[in-house]
Each structure stands twice: as C-alpha cells, then as structure tokens.
Image 1 (tube, rainbow, N blue to C red):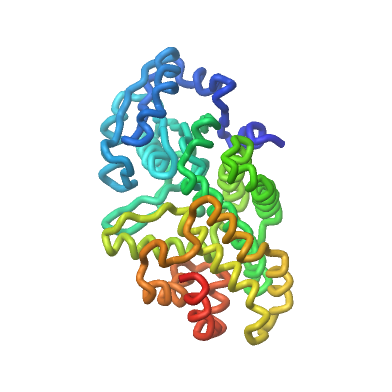
Image 2: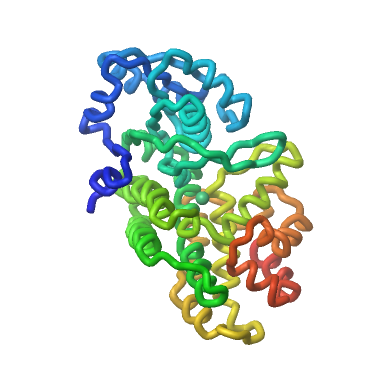
Length: 372
Ligand SMILES: [Zn+2]
C-alpha cells in the first residue's frame, strides 16, 4: 500500500509537489490560511503561499528567530495571528508543526504542514511536546489534515536533520524489542498489527540508507514515509509503544538537563540516535550478564537486532554524533542518566531491565568508555 492510500485510512491527506497539492487546494478554496514560518523556513514558503493566494487568502506570520521553541509564548503568538483564519499551515518540521498543531487544537481549526526537513516522526501525531515553566509537557494537539511534501526541499535539508530523522527511525528496532520483551517479562499487551506496520517501514527505510547518504530524493522519500507511518503505528497501538522506548527516555532525560542549564537543546533525533546505540549495546551484551527468569527469550530477541557498529556508521555518515561528549554534556550527567532515565515513565525497557536486575552498576563504566 502506498503512503497516500495508507494515510487516507488515518484521515491524513499526503500530497507531493508534482501533483500540485489538489486536495489541499480544494480544502482551502475561499478560505483564509495562516502560514506559519520562522526565519529559516520563510524563504521556502513562497511557492506554497502563491498557491494558496490563487485559491483563497494567505496570512503570513513568521517568527523572527531561526530556531523558535515550542512554548506558551510561541503558541500564543500563533493563536493571535490566527484570528479570522480558517486553516493553519506550518512551513517547517518539528517545532513549527508542534506550535501549529497545538494552536489548531485550541482554536478547533484544521491544520496542515508543509514539511521542510525529514527530522522527526511527529508530523502525524495527535500530541505535541511543549515547554511550560521550564518543563517539557505533552499536550493534546490537532492531527494534521494535510502533509505537503516537496522532495527537492526535503532532500536539500541539512544533513544532520536528515540524520536526526534516521536516528528516530533506527530507534524503532529497539522500541519494538523493548515492547516485545516487556510482553514476555511483564505480560504487557503487545499489538502485532502496530508492530508489523512499524517494522516493515523501518526495514524499507534502512535499505534506502545508501541512497540517503548520497542525498538522493528516493532515499529521503523512504525516510519521510517511515516518519509518517510511525505516527500511524502509534494510532493503531493506541499509545507510543511502537515508536518510543529506552532511547527516547534517554533523549527526554538529556532534554530536561539542557533545559535546566538553559542551553540550546540538540535535535530530538540526534539524542534518540545516541540512545539507540546505548540500547543496542545493552541488548547485545546482555548474555554476558547474570542469567534471569525468561532471559533466553530476551537473548533471542537481541540476536535479531542490528549491530551497534552498523547504526553507528549510519549516524556518523549523516553527520550525527555517536558520542555523548559531542553534545558537550558532563560525564557525570551521562553516568546518572544510565541509572535514572528509565524512571522517566512507567514503561518497561532494556534500561529498566538493567537497572532493576542490578546490572547497571557493572555496565555504566563500559557504556561511558564506549559512548562518552
Ligand atoms: Zn522520536
């Protein structure tokens, strides 16, 4: 099933530039459309703005920053700009889409995204991470009606943003394994349909990595499809299990630390990519730790995972860090993270297993030597 047909099943219209975005144009006919950009994406919005002008009216609002953050202030600015608008369109990737979906939700208005980088898997999700009072909080959001794709723009995104998207996809090998071992060890419900949907698209994306590293549009297309389908897999599962495991807990732990220090937060997928390396290492070295009840099943799952080196090479080839020190985080923070990140939410993962079985005491130094 192609991405358009699959998306329709989830109520999302995915269109590409070559088609001229007919469904979107029809939707905004005679309407006032808020076009939300920032200093970086504003230059990429001109084509879509003139297309909207032909069908209805485009109201442009651009954040002056190159990298605004999704918080109460930016959401409020979008709400104010959206007065009298019928539809909200973000031209951007993670942050602008987050702001737009939240504003659309609060105003009960449809929204969409013209994607400028394949950097994370939140395009089609119904929640949005926001920073409120210095904390990251997940809030409800409007699911986008339209995802507009121009592969020449997506393929020209900065390499590290593409690498971040790949990190968010490679992570799914570990998310799915975390979910499966939790079903064995804790009896958690496992949704085969959601897991298969996720797994197939991750495999297709992994196969296209060589094309991606060559900057070919075909590679970016497979990546973008995987990022969109990740959102659908979460809908099928009814939660974020198919797309978020230990590596996302690591990313969230780091994010809170950056927030506390008031420093610029690295891209979501970059942190998730590092977390994925840690997860893969923990799985592959598990058989060298003491045995436990049910361990054989977990070892068997670990054997199906790709190697740490494979993931490391892919991330490095796309300009992403493969050591935590590259993000300039103190060594002590990373050590604490290995022991504490699993507490971020009540979800059983490979990190929970290591920490609860007492394996982390002997493993933390190995991890620091390998990944710091
Ligand atoms: Zn993610």
